[in-house]
Image (cartoon, rainbow, N blue to C red):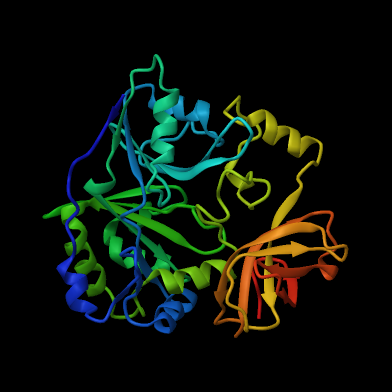
Length: 364
């Protein structure tokens, strides 16, 4: 049974006062708080806070909830302990993506921290498969904030932030912080294989005091709020797939590098037959690659990858101006049978762009 939430999100005056020059895009997302270069530097060498509170958060209540999620998603969840978390994938019958989510197990409910998806695809997908189970689903996106803590110093920063509770901050664990004015949960997730990543979760009204508390702990860290512009450059350089571009209903987890979220020893799940067959018979057709453009003089952001016979063998899905390389780079998919040394890129306007195909993460 699906229960909607009508709570209205509280916007943070703290952020508006601390970052009076923040820049938003046409959709209201924050492109940058200070400057893209400063925020990228924090991601690359220190620690950054990314506000992902608009990403879907789904709560599940009922004693059959964990068994239900274990049955329909890819990872082995049946023995997930209370105050632990694990990433898992939701696929359709063809092994293509519905979403990727971090499952958090609490004392009396489960929570799925999913992607930014206004269509609520995962929510509808879950509701579709609940038939006889006594499970209640709640869209809690507007009731809670979600802060992603990213960067090489993220763990050190959170050790300081968690204080006496930091000893419990182990892989896949959730630390419960009880403050006189708030309750927070910190999860050491594996959401990004490439870089340290943590999730801080709490009720929306605690978002502002939590940010203030984090910045009070900033004496030895170059802590910055991270806008989408810096994060997008950072994640493309590191080959991190996101929903809508590299995570969608056209690809499977073998192809976009998320196969570590799939258990091959558990029982059946939706899409399992396709994923197992691809693995057993080595039938994976394409894989995620990096693309380094040898010219910056083009305006398009959508490209087909062609071989030397002008046959399409791939697609570039994300392009950024790389700070690491000093030129435009991208990530996308290339057929395994294609000779990467002989491919070329063509834009929608048929413009041919010189490019190098590289392994991920992209290096200087």
